Image (cartoon, rainbow, N blue to C red; front, side, top):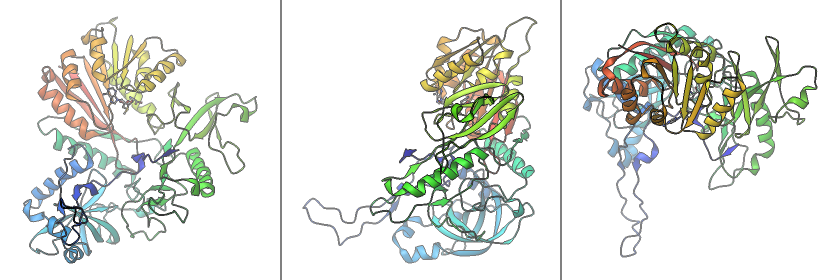
Length: 555
Ligand SMILES: C[S@@+](CC[C@H](N)C(=O)[O-])C[C@H]1O[C@@H](n2cnc3c(N)ncnc32)[C@H](O)[C@@H]1O
């Protein structure tokens, strides 16, 4: 358990400007003469904060511009008098109100509905409103509870008319519509995949408008659409200044205070959750165990905390007693380690749920075995990994004379997922990652999978270009950075090195689009490449997230 640390993987925040954006001057401050300033209230002022254009808040700005264009509105037409609102509680009551018959006109790439309503004070003006869990075509009742300079946030209270795309009978989780983890359970899986394709198209429209891109391929589905997540991080809050009297909720962040599904729970910031439908079976057993433990010891916690639940798979010898072969893991009420058995080919597998961040866990993918620290990065949907790794391997190939070697560089290699799964089709692999711990595991993983043609370097991705000795015309590169994408130093050095092929895998298609426009149009050799293919892989069914894979060929 990590006290005070939030893993936001299932707690995606709204694309909103944070509380700190509002400067509230201290009304009780002491002046230079030492006198208390109780009598004069300082005016509160909205402070604009810089946002990364590839973050949800940054993307919302592009989406708002699109709506202005489509509905022929100006920035002024949708502006809210935010500074007056901050200093006038009567005005605030007018702004923060219920509105009926709101038509949802769009779905954002963050998975929320967007609507247009009249400004409550200046009635000739409009407001753009974010409505989580509503989809394009729904007619809804909402409660607006927060105002920003050019949009407002709301809770979904009721759906008076369903969109043709909505099918609430598909919803499997009783907390869907309150928990911030999933956004798309009310959509068929085909529509989810279609929306993710649109997210990729929009990302390139917004962040790479000067690029010509190929037609985006159909999103590759996940073999498992529920019960796929091998890692969950439920959390709980402990009151800060007053003693915590009741047992706190144990689960995932709530998304506002919607009431459209009329289910219990979600009144607080955290929705108390007994089962998560996107988690794997053993992860849900771990959740039950850890909730039980928490019900007994919650009063010993002084701070809010996050609990790690990570699936661990082990090949066991069925002839020997199972209990003796199990590593430390989540235990049931009788203190026995919980496990489930599985058969894979001739192998007998046992799955457990690990809760210690430093513990080593194992995954099996396409006949390869990977070890890594439970708290370190590893892809969270193992059902789709065979498809992704095969796709990457195929697309790394370059046309070359018979007998000529092929080399591979895996920038941002983590514990070696792509380096190792692609190693059989190439002569040499060089992986690089900034995490020393991940590189240690990448080396171990190469050894345990009998991969002898891979070496791993710890350092920033661009370091690879100092060390690399393979001819660029026979080298392909995989790039798989974290959400923020690559920096310009790396992109310039990549361009100077000029590899034969590039496969860019990304969990944030917006930073991928920005990086590819920079690489193709602003680096020395970028113009010698074209994007050959672009498509999504659905690593996270029921959520708005999409993994985007772009393949670049040198002309
Ligand atoms: C999305 S993960 C991908 C890991 C691996 N490809 C996989 O699929 O398991 C991104 C990786 O980039 C690494 N990373 C982040 N910034 C980096 C940098 N500047 N240079 C090299 N690696 C970096 C992180 O440590 C992490 O392992």
